[in-house]
Length: 117
Length: 117
DNA sequence: TTAATATATGATCATACTCTCATATATAAT
DNA sequence: ATTATATATGAGAGTATGATCATATATTAA
Image 1 (spheres, protein in one colour):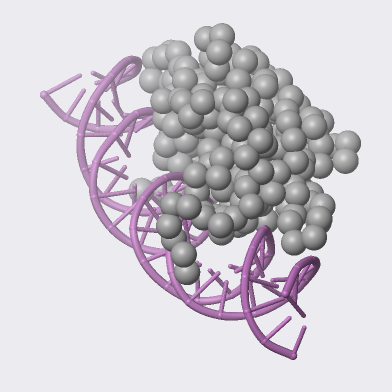
Image 2: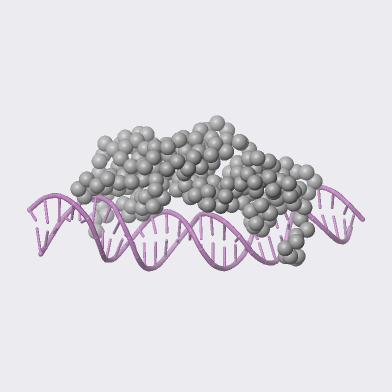
């Protein structure tokens, strides 16, 4: 009922202050959560995981994921925009690969986390 | 125009087969992407990061993030449902903490990834 | 019991995502 | 130039997500 700025809640101010001092900063938080967001969709995760082993073109990925090439293309644009994949043109075909193999560590770590628990 | 099962695209079947053999399996993919999804929201990421250092109650977190307690509670339910946090009751107050400190590795790895590039 | 407080939860709304379909672009072949 | 192919892109639809508000529950104090 009382929406004033002075709430009557018992906030542990010391904890809040400590957390604030150890906080990451909003820009960094947003950047990290965006990186996680890139991996937070099954299709994109499969794409990233597949590209870690070999470069692939759009229709390879569409065949692998069993979705439309348009859908794959849209997801690849997202990953491209986020700076996670790049492509190489060979004639009409665009081969995609990750910019950085370290994405594999992130996926592997998440996998291990789920495995032992 | 042609939606038959036999598409005329030039799929690199060897690549698709290799990717398929190295694939993670849909269940695992979904589990991993769900884990990433849990970290893919700025509010949840801040909550997780804060709890890594100390247990905190709902209104502490609400004060820290400067959002409503209801919003925090909803996010905590999500994290609880996903098995990432647990709580301990002390009277009326529920103190939350991560089930597993390894989440910190995941966040740290993502942070490093973004830092050196 | 009643009142107060901290949190949980359901309904709802606005926004963001992801797919599909249609169309556009770029390269290659004729 | 025309055609074909691989991919990109814009618009739209259906769904998921995240916040808010109202209400419910659980614990404590009186």
